[in-house]
Length: 328
Image 1 (tube, rainbow, N blue to C red):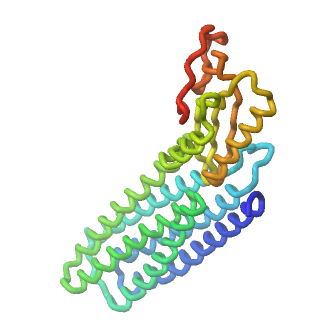
Image 2 (image 1 turned 45 degrees about the horizontal axis):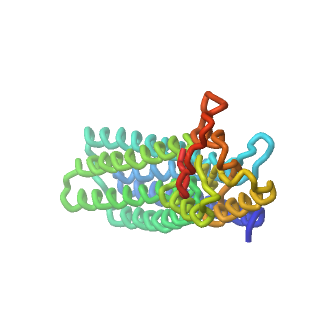
Image 3 (image 1 turned 60 degrees about the vertical axis):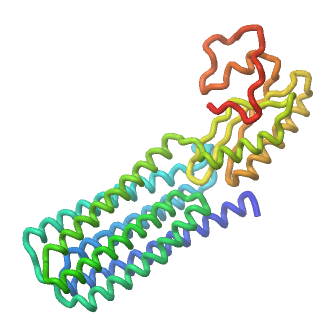
């Protein structure tokens, strides 16, 4: 299944997963606040606060998925996929906010220790909530990678951060109950906040990097090289390869150099074959080719992002570039 049908199926799948994330956040919020109410643990309170952030992030992800999966239109001719990076950035910022909230609560409890109560049932409820996040988080990360959805993957990683947070909190609360050393509860909460900060910073960095038109991964670029090598010969060469990723969509631009005495039809047929091969190899990709005569020196004036300032380069033609192309 290709084209609009495939995109519609992908959109439906992504939305279902986001709804699953929202449902999981609502369930875990109820369970974790119940655990906090039973025990009075600031660690469990911080864990519950992060689940509230999970819900807000999931709701924002719902909006972004609906937006990013819309087809191109007159105002957004290259599609809406970059909205994925906005979601990852917001998710990272929310994680950092949760870390600050946890840190403030932990410091207050460190200064004003409080006895923990009903540890057994409280930890049981917290562990059940953790199991929910573990299952949903792994599912979101897997689907995010399968569909190249930065939004789903970020949401899944957020939930997995919540899982490790919960595990740490449960261990701390159990240790406090066994040892009676009350400061351990807020100290673990501070450690959890530090771990959350690391995840939040990574998500914000990934979002920023994506918005700056980062090139395809090394693995994807190697795939491009392999495809171009199947067409390269003494007559056919490639250069000015430029790539970028926008959410799930890859963009590839390449110049195809052929003998100047080829007919337009022959050159066009080759370009069509190259584009089709690259689309099949990369999946959800948009490919642009530019046909040039290999004997003309002007064909080598635009291997970079900007053309030479001199529109008439030297008369002597430059040697043909290697088969795998010059990346700009």
